[in-house]
Length: 120
Image (cartoon, rainbow, N blue to C red; front, side):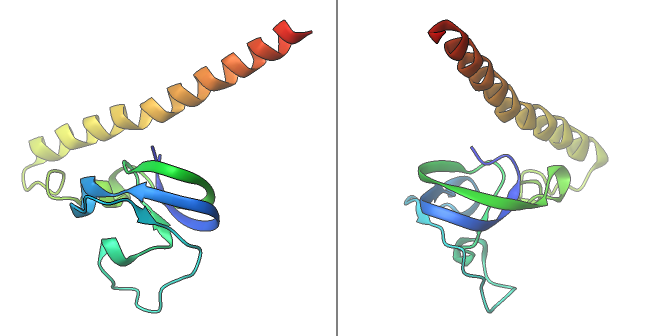
């Protein structure tokens, strides 16, 4: 899962499922080439990976361009609510959602350290 909006700087056959944002049912192959049109639709921006989308294949490195309420996920219709109460609810969901990748990374790091010590 992509933890923040990223500008992709290096990729190895990266494919991302962006159906949460664009509704496309097929994973999109990402590249490092920048677009000539800055106002292109989300689905056409092949050099960006968005928070909340799922990596289905490959790997990449990127620079964080937006997080939290500044991400494209926060600008999507469920989070672009009109009332303050709806915005607070969305902020809480995004904060909780943002903790999931961090917990997964910490678990993987712990497992890697444990395996390394067990191999000695």
